[in-house]
Image (tube, rainbow, N blue to C red):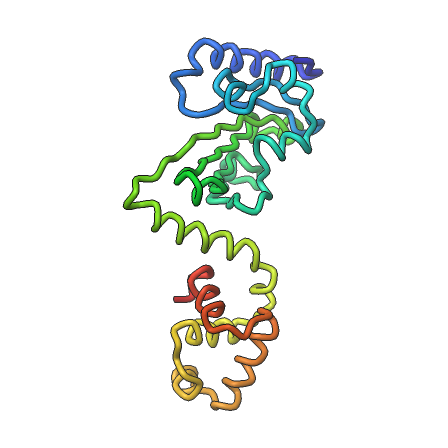
Length: 225
C-alpha cells in the first residue's frame, strides 16, 4: 500500500490488520480501495478464494476488470437500495446495493455495502470499504424475491423514459395499469374521454409500448398501483 496521505495510510493500515486478524468473524467479502486515483488496497482471504485472486493480483487489478470480476454498481442486475449522507451534508457516507445475477440459476443474491471511510472529508472521499454479503433465499421466499428484483431491474432500465411523462400522464398511467377504461379514467380525473385517449396515446409513444402487460409493469415498478 502506497498512500501519500500518512494519516489515511495509518488508519487504513489499522483496518487491514484488523480484517487480517478477525476478518473471518465478519460476514462476507471485505475490500478496501482508493477510487481516485484507483488503487486496490486490500481483499480478505474469503474474497481471494471466491474470485480466484491473490493479494498481488488484486493489487494490480485494473478498474475495468474489478467491475467485470468483482462488482459493478452500474451492472444490469445490480440495483441501488439506499444512499445515506454524512450528517447534514451532501457527502455520501454509505451506499447499499443488491446484485442478483445468480438468483434465477442458484437462488442467491449479494448484498453489497459501500462505506466511504472519510465521509466528512472531501479530500479523502475516494477511500471505500466494500462488503459483499451472499444471501440465499428460502424456497418459499425465492419467487417473491424474483418478482421484486425483476421490478427493480425494469425500473432501472426504464427510468429515463418514465421521467419524460408529465404528472397528468402518470395519473392516467396509474389507472391504465389498473385496467380502468378511458371513460372511467375521465370521470375520476374530471377530464374528457378524448383527452384521456390523447394522454394514453402520448404515454404509449413515450414508453415505446402498446402492450397492456408492459403498462402494468410500469405501474408496479414505479409504485403507481
